[in-house]
Image (cartoon, rainbow, N blue to C red; front, side):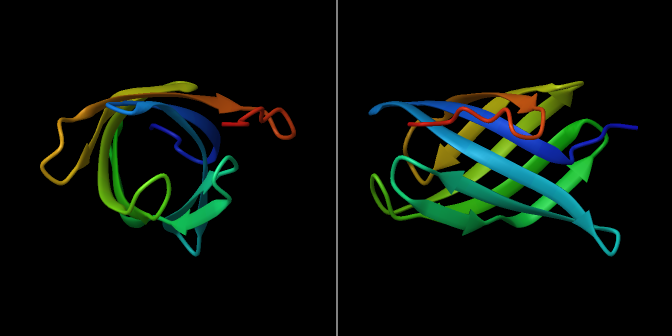
Length: 110
């Protein structure tokens, strides 16, 4: 069984450069929940449509910085690593990579 819970450092390779974020996933009352943090732009966004199906994790989120976008993510988890794609409307898909970090280890700084 794939475990998604934990703190993940993400790198999204977008047309405007690499964007970094921290993803916090937890299970509350048997339901997977998540929040994305962008320390560089000071945003914290609740994830929607968060689904773990086998080793595939999908979610949606809206951001306002560096520009207003509705994003969808589709990644595959393998141990403490994730890889996949993010899509923002009609823009080309962006490569997403991530790694799970130990408590207190996060180094996302933009």
